[in-house]
Length: 117
Image (cartoon, rainbow, N blue to C red; front, side, top):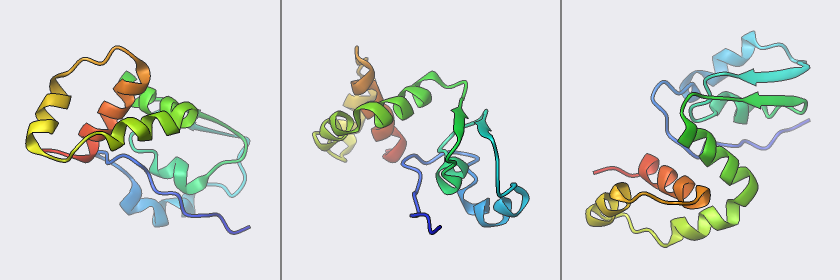
């Protein structure tokens, strides 16, 4: 089976994307369940695309919220992201806001992860 290459949508310090081609040599070809205790950008998960049960976790609650919202409400997250501009003023304005709902917080988290000033 030829899997489509799925890239992580987040950048993450300590990410394994650079190591994935070597790392897969040490992962069994068949697994019953995939457990990822340090999700980060999810590069191993996206590369493996496990078909069985997957348990993704991380201590960072906003990171987990971003993954949940992309899974469950991707169109709404994208819609919010499209309203953001990649300017220094917008970056600091978006960074300083406290968003009340999970979808807006996910969009903020992704935006801040992908841009910086």
